[in-house]
Length: 93
Image (cartoon, rainbow, N blue to C red; front, side, top):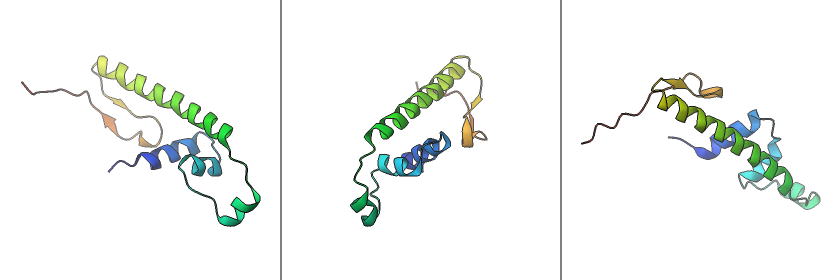
């Protein structure tokens, strides 16, 4: 089963996003004591991280589309590098 939140969290961390920002993006609340004394909402940091993720996701999709157009197998970048993607051939009439 694919878990998008886990994938996003992992990729954001790989791109250097700090854990509290990743947790905020996922909607996880910090412990009560932290919420009491640190009331700053890291909206700017969250936006920057999601913009970096959006750019990375765009590069992944464009890479997959260009490899499918050339009809050659490709692999995903990063931790899923061992997974080979093959072109999709729809055999339905």
